[in-house]
Image (cartoon, rainbow, N blue to C red; front, side):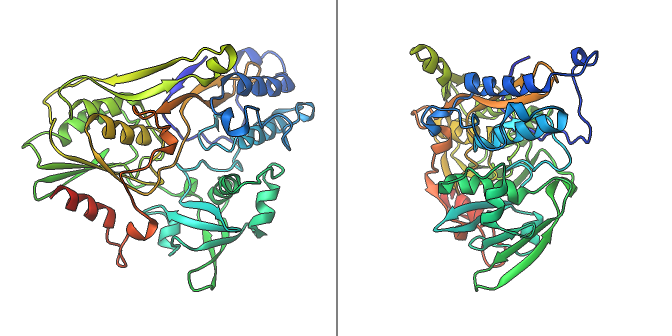
Length: 412
């Protein structure tokens, strides 16, 4: 079965392996599924341009079909094949309790490799890392008792050479195995070492929140989406949030949308802010052009619906935990509502993911198969806000939300 997804949905944690009904009568051919996974990546993955057109999983450390003999070795093979893509939007639909957590959905540290160091460039609001005092600008020195260089080299053989690749590996390590407390050593702004034990985000209960938190600031209405862009009931919540007196301005806060969602809900919001049909993003299948030399690309449109708020000025706030559909909604609001966008860089999740099932085990693999673009042709992952905020611009010394204050000041 193949189906398109616009969500970076969390994996279901399972200590056991589940096989398709067809595999129950006999032992699955695990090696065949390993070969099939490589072929799926060959045929379906949309972003080989990042690797000069080649599939980096072929020949990567830990990705040897001949070593696959059972469920455990297939899972190890598949995890290393996915890691070779260096793409947080390529996901396995099965995991073990010790599998690394998803970034950004289950990670509270954004790590980048800069000038030979692993630098914390953002910390998730309300997270264990923030509660422990971790700040942007700190350097991550070690994880689970290993130096960062050692840990990166040990992640599926460590084929991470460029800064972007090392940053990807560091974020995987920072999310940590799902069943373990994370052990870190940081170097803070004063040069002092800080050893911290942080719970894995799979172990942290999320407090119940409304799908949208709504607040009013002297006629300016703020809609904060609480990681809800794939939740049933969101259309009704959008209409409720936009009901009543016409606001003087709207702030759409998408800083907590790491798990993505569905374009249905993005169009539901955008449709309330326009009075005529407009394009909001471009889609393409790069592999079709790669295979045939003939490109396939099309524009997705959003249609007006309900009582129109067209003309109300809109500011969108985004950041590192704006992922997938959150990123699509940001570029869509820029296109259709002429919104001012501000914030730190987004998660940069590549394209739209599709589900593919391995034939022997029935395990699901989620691969970015469509490339997505702003209507002006900018790749979604390369989009920059109209007003780019650095980490120092996001929070005041006493926790003030400087990004929201900036958004409100733009609308006043």
